[in-house]
Image (cartoon, rainbow, N blue to C red; front, side, top):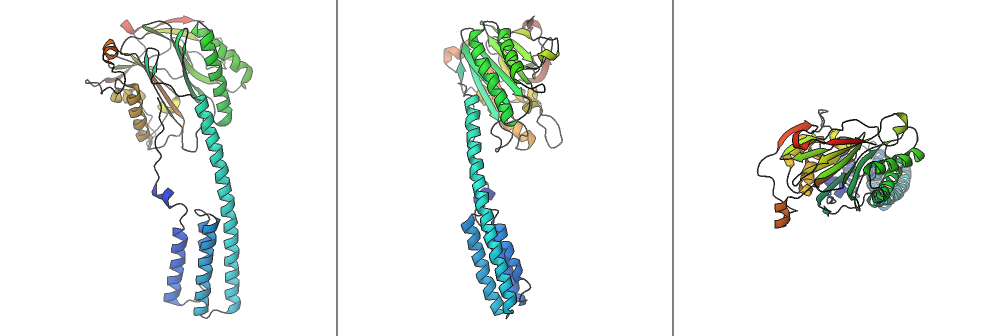
Length: 393
């Protein structure tokens, strides 16, 4: 289950609200004036202090900086014998800048409070859409990891859901074209239809058809959703329907394999533009197997050299028998690859079928890493005992 990472305060955040730079500027001007005795040459520069204080301080802090600059400016002007008219003009300008900066600081604080409230609502909406997934659903160990592109972007178009139905465990991972509130509205529509249809429709292709019909009625001509819909109708197999989404990764016997669809299908919402229909794949899924579904924010993440992140290699390096630990390590590896900040939303959902030994010993969480390092070769498609069969709608 996804867990929020504790927020760490940087030195810049801790210094926010402290007028360090404005005070340093005032100090420098005072020292220069005392050493040089330059009368009115440097005193007008004192107005820079309250102006800079606007960026970090509230109105009270700005006024305090302005008052300090005014007192020191008056003292230095009288000490240096500055003409009364010139000194009065400088102090009047300093007072005007201080008042304007205080007003600007008050407006900035008000906008920040409004923005914080909007972000809080957006985060609540995201959590309502992407409901927490338990660590165990049906016969599977499950883990989910969702990362927004930045701390300011708490809401996006990536979606996932996993439900236990009369027809077995069913899940969806998808990516809505676009960002912001329109993408969230589309994601809410897809998830709502999926959760309802997953309980009502015995056939997984009918679930996908329900989503397609709903999107066709509600989306614009340029909007669409890529998605993988999966189901576990019976022991030993998984059903997959891939609608223009990135292919899942299957882990079997320590080897990472790419589950390619035998016939590509268009994204949800675009079926009317093509004669292609989704294909149902039946994938053997036995004890110890793991399946990773993800969005393109993972595979399209680039480092400073513009190289894409290799998810198959990363999964092979960090694979364990605990999906939560695996996804945690993958997430850290992904952030290290991009330099600490993602530029697109990224979602990861992993299933694992526990082995009989896991069930007997009760070891289904917190497993140690595999003793043998998994092979990192990604094998497109499946063959031999892992061959998938397909059926068209």
